Image 1 (spheres, one colour):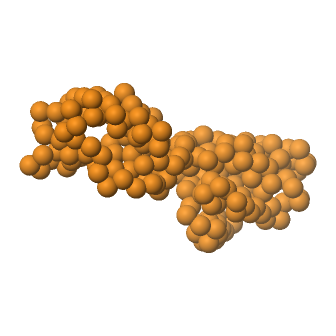
Image 2 (spheres, rainbow, N blue to C red; image 1 turned 120 degrees about the horizontal axis):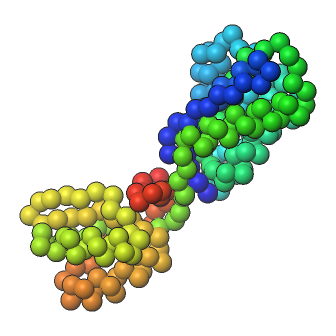
Image 3 (cartoon, one colour; image 1 turned 90 degrees about the horizontal axis):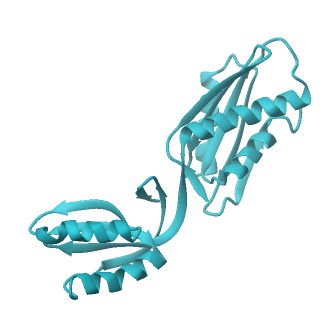
Length: 212
């Protein structure tokens, strides 16, 4: 599954109807609904505030609303967009200001889908994976060599503490961590190892990672 990196916004106009969209990360269905209510207050004068969300580690919690639009023309198409992007813990809300011209069933589906897609694309996506988090302590002279090995092995550095020695907080996929161990042993003659290992879920994108 994937997660959005930041709040994404979009806006399209179809036959003078204005569709304002927003996509963002949420931790639970209740948080999603709370945010929907805040959007309704913000755009209190809009004709419709439609939404869809997917929550849960496996995307098992789903819900959508047409908010007065003809059944199946708003919420469900927006949910289809979320599913197409493969995201979880994500809410998308599309606010419509009616422009005076009916769009028809097909026009509504296209407008709501396009608005949701634009918001998601502007939010950016990160892949969620299972992995191992741990710590490596090394002397200052060996930091450069260690960082090169970690980068080449697909391991992410979450934080670096510079004290008497240098302590790196790392995370990586299970297979990558398992491959790293013999590499470290060979490169440093058994002088360093991964400490305090724990299984975690994290998301990654463009060279960085964050723990969930």
